[in-house]
Image (cartoon, rainbow, N blue to C red; front, side):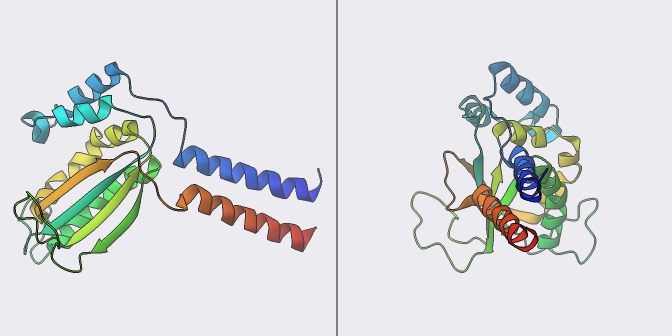
Length: 206
């Protein structure tokens, strides 16, 4: 096999591996899967008395594609002293400790944080919402699919430090966006980087 073929074959294989991780094989949730996920979620104490009708509708309207979760967050001045929170810990540190295990599970299933930032000022336009003038952190997470999202929610590791979230937050709102669009996007960026690397190797070694 010639060197150019090896270079471009390896490039294709690397991109295929990335594509399988980031995009995967898409298929919609069945009604049986929706019922099963919600049943499992109800086994965790914090969800037993919650109305999950909104989540059910979201799952039943599955497109099989990725979606983005938009988050707005305000932190408590000091976190609640739940088990695992140490004296002197800030609310931000407590929230980060919660997010560590959550982000690990996201990454394993092709999910990534695509945006995060500190809020620069008060809300300019608030209509029909109380106590929405002040936020501290805004973030957007991308999930590969609703199935992956639910696999995270029902995983025991997700609930090990779930109380940290409530200990750190004074208020928050999170809602899914689908369909969504990201200019450029990771598949295009990774494809261009791999193609550039392969082209440079071709020029240097061939």
